[in-house]
Structure formats: C-alpha cells, structure tokens
Amino acid sequence: MLDIFLQTLPFFLILGLGYGAGLTRFFPEEATAWLTKFVFYFALSAMLFRFAANLSVSEVFDMRFVAAYLWATGFVYGIVMLVAFLRGTSIEEAAIEAQCGVIGNVGFLGVPMLTLLMGEAAIGPVMLVLSIDLIVFGSLVVILVTGSRDEGGGAAVLRTVGLGLLKNPMIVAIVLGLGWSTLQLPIPRVMNGFLELLGGAATPGALFAIGASLASKSAERPFVAGWLSLSKLVLHPAAAAFAALVLFSVEPYAAAVMIAAASLPVAGNVYILAQHYGVAPHRVSASILISTAFAVLTVSLVIGWVSVLY
Image (cartoon, rainbow, N blue to C red; front, top):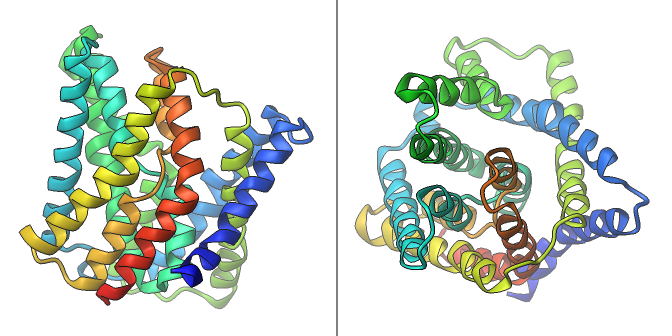
C-alpha cells in the first residue's frame, strides 16, 4: 500500500505546487483559466485522440461495464438526491449536489494518472467512464436544472444538451479517434510525434491547473460539502465495486479501472455548471476542495486495493 501511495504522491505534489502558486498569486486566476483552456482544448484532446485512434470500438465498448457503471452511479445519484430532498432543497440544488456525489475528475486527473499507474490498457475503460459521465449524467443535470425552471420547453433543453456535447473537446476527440481507428487509417509518424508531444503536456498541465484553481475555492458549508465528498470518495467506488464484481461480473481489470475512476474527487466542471446556473456554487466549491484534499489518501487506498483484482 505504501508503494501505491508513493506512486500517486507525485501527481498530488504537482497539484499542491499549483495550489501554492495560486494561493500566493504567483499564478493568478486569469493565468489558471488560460492554462485550463490549453489543457482542455489542446493537450488533453491530443492525448485522448491518440489513445482512441489506437483502439477499436470493440476494445472500448463493453455492455457489462456500461451497465455496471450506470447502475452504481445512478444508485449513488439517487441517494444524494434523496438526502438533499429530505433537507428541503429544490430539484436544481439536489441535481447539482448529486453531480458532486458521482462526477469525478476523470478527464483532468483520471486519464493521465490511471493510464500511468495501471497501464495504457486502462485508457479504454477510463474513456468509457468519461463518456458516460459527460453524455448521460452531464445531460441529466442540464435537463433537471433547466426543466425545473421550464426554460423554453423540451426542445430548448435538448438543444442546450446537444450543443454542450458537440462543444466538448473531450467527446469530440474520443469520437474522432475511434472514427480514425474504425477506418483503419494509419497515423503518420510526424502526426503521431506531434500528438504524443502535445498530449504529454496534459498530465502536468492538468494537475497544476487543478491545484491553482483550488486556491480560489472556499470551504463554506463544510458539513454538506463533507457529505458530498464522502459520497464521491467512498460511496461511489463502493457502489462501483458491488456492481462490477457482484451484479454484472465485469472482467477483473476493467472492474479495477472502473472502481479506481469512481474514487476520484469531485470534478471541476461541476463548479462551472453550478456557477453558470447560479445553483449552490459555494457548496460545490467546498466539495471540490475537501474531496481533493482527502483524495491524496483515499485514491491511493482504492488503487492499492483494486490492484489485487488483476
């Protein structure tokens, strides 16, 4: 277990370096925004395209895996929403809290970290988790929030969801990469070198950007944020383990990757959603801060445990 912790520690040290740079204002919020944009639109997209272009759809898509992850995520999503309703919150607040409880930082943290720690074979399951998070649950929260406000009716909601997916470079990169693979087109050496070099910036860039962005987060309403962090770091991977290993008998290695991905801290894009719709941004901010701080230990523990599965 100590060995796993030491392997994950460099990732969180880069994150901590970014946090220090943001906290001291050596790296101001404007710089963090531009670095995040570079990673999101260029470096991470290059990494995802290169990985996807070297995979086939059959290597990525696994119905048992999809069913297990949907069941586990939907189960925890429902629990968090129920607890929110019992506290008397609105549908839109409950939906945002549910996102905190199940949507981890798979794109910025999971893709680079899990592929390095668990091997490049992890990229298929990780991309499947990322796609389900973005397409299914990313759409669900928009439908719940805008639907509860009745903003323009069903057609407007669907248009918002569709445009959101089309504008997401991670989804576009995965789809284009799998399309390239399906057409069995070779990747020219120069293009492969370009993608490898650009994609190599994704890991340190994403980790530094996460840390720097955390410096501007506040820990208001720590009780609720603590519950949401517990849901993300403990309940979600536990539900994923039960679904993958007991209910759906997912192949052990893929199950291990799913559980590890489910253990990641709350994603930063949940805060962007909360801020955009004006729904509990401080609560989400605190959840990201608390879950990321505790993830230094919990993610190491989960990866250490799942490593015995394969």
